[in-house]
Length: 604
Image (tube, rainbow, N blue to C red; front, side, top):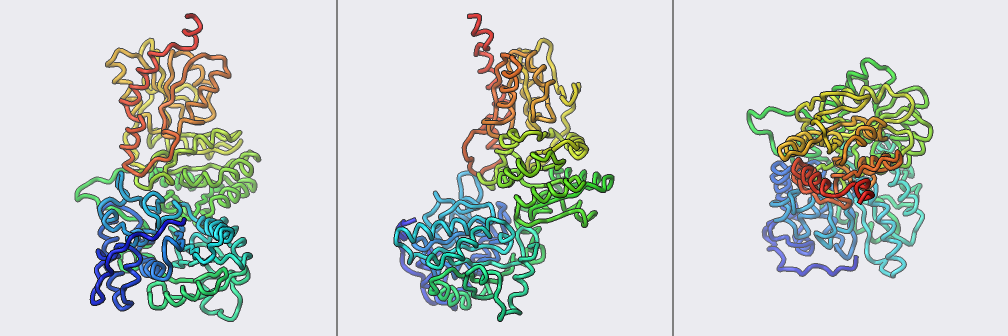
């Protein structure tokens, strides 16, 4: 927090400005106002050229170019604290704080620049946030600490999108900040009418009314804030005096800034949701491969046509979670609640209590925020709500905040909740239908961010359990969780080549542990579970506990993700590094076979 300003170099020439000459915010403050439009154009070019090659968040960052320039000219980061909510609008901030080359060459690449603020990258990055509605809470805490320490002259600025104001945490923080007149926090409201999708709810309507009701107190003033704006967020000359005024007020203040998502790039302005993120264009002649999300989207729409009681709920992401198709066919049965995962879950509980069957489609990492509501508002009441968790497991370039590697550990603690993990497209359709047909409590279905791959057939089904491969006199049982079935099948052949006989099974419903899986496990000497979740509290741990409770002394060896935050990188590489590949599974089996089982130890 108290890190010194970085060492400066000579400021750029007055007659012209080159982005490459801006090595730090002090250089930026030396640039004449008249040259800033040219600098903004260079920044936009860098963002477009980089993101369309390596992928990343395009629209949000194009919309905050001038705003970020103005912030770094008025405030002296890192002495003053700039917080971005969410962090996906921080590309310009990175470019202006000495990371231009890294941005252009390594953005979201393994070992390269993160797509979000990252504390280890720069003293200018204070928080590593990529989940919305949190920056105001951080700002409140930092301002409190500054007041205690006696550093109240150091500004605390939170840049918050209007979409983030649909999240409940934002209002908890506003309630506290607005009441503390001696702890000034500057809230820069970046109002572009979008989160991922167009902003929903009454607050969005209120923000749209503000220019025409200057004489009437607005929401923020009622909460204790001074209010400045709206101001054009693409006019640095207009922004700077308002930001200086906000700093001089010495009280909590909201600076309402109007921006255009995708500014300066016509395709992003025309399609703000589609180009919220962007990546390299598909190679000519390449055949698109179906994704898990696309298969889910089509199947849910078919179920909706058959079942008038099925409704869908999303937390501001109907497109990415696969609900857009359902929403287009059944708009009256699809509800976007904004960036409010907690409300999404409890609202779904209300829908279920009133006779509907809600399908809550959400990223696996965002379910973490709604765990308490799932536990106490849904499961406690044994309500039939289905949770569809997209982006389960390793997501790749979005990094540690987006890897969906905690859900199985959390969901396994919820009484009465059944969790399914499909291994291929047919199982996804099958298990989704089974989930919405289940009426005795909640269900969950998880799948990754990836192409769906080939079908993995079963040779036998025992109750809900699928047997994929079985060698005579098999001593090893491989338990495949969802898409890891493909690698388990490949491992089976590698083991056979070594003379090791194995069985491969897919439980389909992976939690709670089925009696049939316990019986199958006891018929083998060694059990190896394979899951793209952390090992602690996952399927392997649950199976080991179930076997112990049943009095079976069969060792379970999980192949799972390590219990640590994993950096961004290519999905396949991270899985291989974690042992979630055929050779990694074989290595685990070989090590496990060399160990005596509990029964063998007891006879020695």
